[in-house]
Image (cartoon, rainbow, N blue to C red; front, side, top):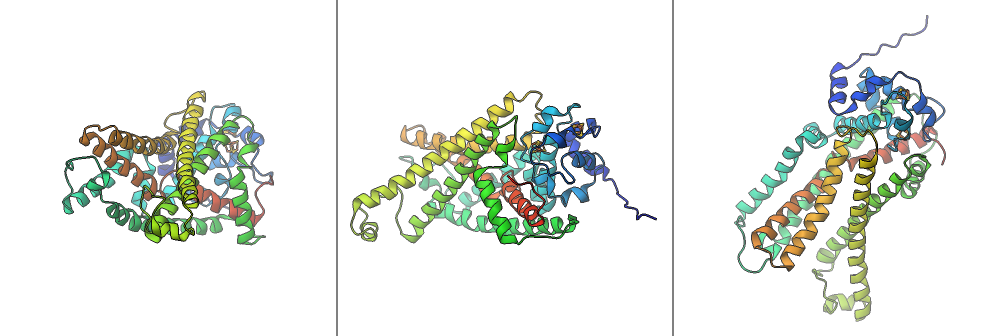
Length: 392
Ligand code: SF4
Ligand code: SF4
């Protein structure tokens, strides 16, 4: 007699998915059009039809172990062709968000950051924390005289806050990703056929060129927006690392004078070389910020023009895109208010909010939309090891 496989539906999980915006999944009648139109789905056990069925049945344990949901790039070609309006592309996006929450360490942070309803709680954490730091260090109040942001928050306070918290975030993320890897290994019925390193290198190449993204038919323009945001983040990450190196390695402080004797000595006394370094650094920072803002704006424009978009479905993405724009806007406004001699209370308050938004983007990485970059890289690497993903 054939061996029986018993699935236990998780009704609570179905309810959670619906509340997160995946209620369209109940319209799916398993016609498989979505799997046929998806350019990224492999021939063997294609997605997203089977994931729609698993979501309808609340098969949480199977879904958190699935690498396939991460092979989807949310182009929504399948949603366009779905005859029932079940929006499989968006359902898969919600499943990915659930997987991030499920693997999150500690789990309550996954709930706070992962659920857009908790946005005020997520923002209250850095607000209260910063106020406590300012209170304890005697900086709670608007400094008198010319607006200089370091009078409110000395630069070494910022480093001492963001440095250890970033390390903590990396550790938390490491725990989450090791749980994810274990789940992928448990969920696979296949044995790896390729090594980790070659698969990882191939994955990086694919991600850098967005080659899979470009295969989508109907929503090609999403790849441009995604690429702008992707490279904007990388550029800002590199400039942040450079700023840390300048400050702590070279003791070269902003606004980076070109006649600094120590820096000049490093470049054989050539002011031109120091100037080129300074301009390249500033250019990279500004071009990256612009790319981030342009990509964020394009994502919003694409979302708005998408007919029949479910605002609940995309609210997780909205929160993140909104936060990226807020970081850029509050940073620029704070500088503008300072230079234009706005009342100090407005300039300092804007700067304070800027730090809160920066905290959200950096320290909440293991739980926010940004985490999907690492989860996706890990999942694609794993499927390449299994030789499951399609060739591009
Ligand atoms: S999601 Fe839509 S296209 Fe896909 S199987 Fe269900 S009804 Fe068919
Ligand atoms: S959203 Fe795009 S990549 Fe994802 S399943 Fe649908 S068609 Fe495939």
